[in-house]
Length: 419
Image (tube, rainbow, N blue to C red; front, side):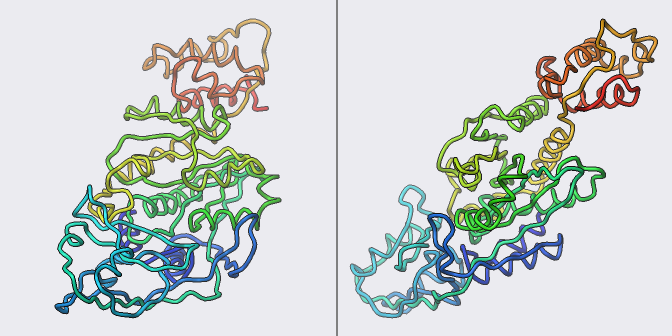
């Protein structure tokens, strides 16, 4: 995963342009993508796909001939979507176009101007304070013209047409945790679910520019989403050392919420469960009232809550391979639980089963689990078609994946069946 992160990190991405296409080509070498272009000017609900933006170079040269900001050094130096500009300005004329973070003097901030035609540069605040009066040469070689917005998806068919969506966004340039950590984990999660045999759900992996990309995607797939999508997750901020945070779905009590809390609770890792809030990321589009799709987000540190967020400090040193791997394993466990969370019916519902008769009382699992008998009896008792496996697991304060193993044994013995 880290190798993919390193390959994607330097690319100057935005909500449109060749940076997005280059990133998708790299991902497409690892998993098969269907890539779609949406023309500029396309109306998508209340939004319109903007003109395409591309940039080749940009810099500010001070009165002594030194470059104080250079796109070649960091693409964060230029406000994303800056219109082209060339000229010489006095310092007081230049200052309104400069951005820094006084409380973090050693980082370059990330700024955008997607829907307002203007230009700007981002500097370390310590460098901004050194600027002297004089004339500064400014040049931005960029283009804003009709083109298209690019997104991609990859679908893994399951036994049912009901889909779980896994959505990540890749519009941010050179930000490792906020954005491309989600892309890297999603790419490897696709490989895992593709190799997994006999998925119950279908899985739709979506790679879009944030906000306008998911809006355009939903516009194109509106009927399909309303009919087939069961729920999903937005993947972002997955590679730092922070504890796990799960942002609930808009519904707040959906099966996905129960599953994530159950898996996190029994994982042994520190975690926090959070209610749905706005704004956020693309879950706010999937969960808008018209779609009302239950979409949560299992993160590490939460966007806007870690000091490296939207700065040059969100770099390849901030994200670690071990953290990405740990997050991938957590998502694997969550999706395994999703694939196990059925409702069962006890096929012998009158009175308690004679466990010995069915080879259940002396099952080898009993030796390692003092709760074994209670789990078997509770699972049988609440297999009434009304309680999901996760609900039964929570009643027992047990991991759903442990209960899933017992449910498979009961199903093999034809003592229960899925509804």
